Image 1 (cartoon, helix red, strand yellow):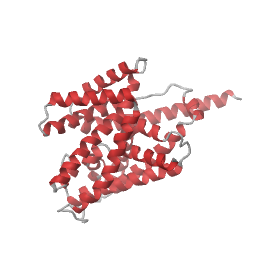
Image 2 (cartoon, helix red, strand yellow):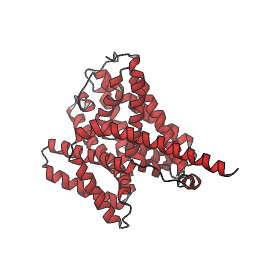
Image 3 (tube, helix red, strand yellow):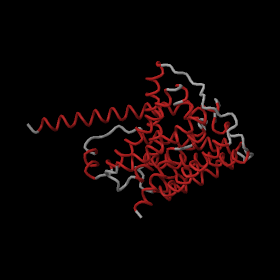
Length: 328
């Protein structure tokens, strides 16, 4: 029974991280492939960092650590970042559905109903969607590879040492941004796994392998488009199936990040009112547009969350020094 829970936890985390940007290949293109062969290093580094985040999130679940963290007021951009990430997903879903002839108003009404109901029900609904996304991607990737017409292992990538530092920075931004979207799911998945190094390593390795696989598909096919994975698939039935997975992944990311976005409105005790306010906030952001949010806001989110980490760590260490001096 424990093994099934561990597997479910790993799959839910994978589904939360492997969101719309990953499924479409846009994130892999922007954060890794743009740096040539050093992008491979960035992909591996991001997988390792995710492993650390999963482990330390599990550690944070312990009561002792939680009490220590509550000593001082912390800088917290996370819920606001999650509002913008969810808004980007709403905008993306509407964009895809409108491409299939579904009126924009009907698309918004459908998404509004899904988002509000899932926010009211809780995180279990997001977990189910995340598991579907992760399993579907693992199953579909071999079929995609075998149906690529223009694939070659002679990657047309550069090898420029000036890309090394930007590559490392963008790997950190990538992890920070995805952590913002998936942290509620990660926290739920690692509950009860306070020192589970094995759980963190397995999840990290699978994430790294999937990232490198998508990297190889895009680089090998030599595609540079807004949605390279979709462009790489030439088989029509497979493209349709993958498009469905793409929409599901956006729903997955939307639900995962919106659970954390609810914290913006926690001063209100009524769960329905919190969920309603969160839904309206997310929909307001979605009108900015999918492309603008992905291209401009996502990197800013990564920077903000790294600043948050540094500032809070500095405050925590400073408090420890003050407390230690009070003992003497």
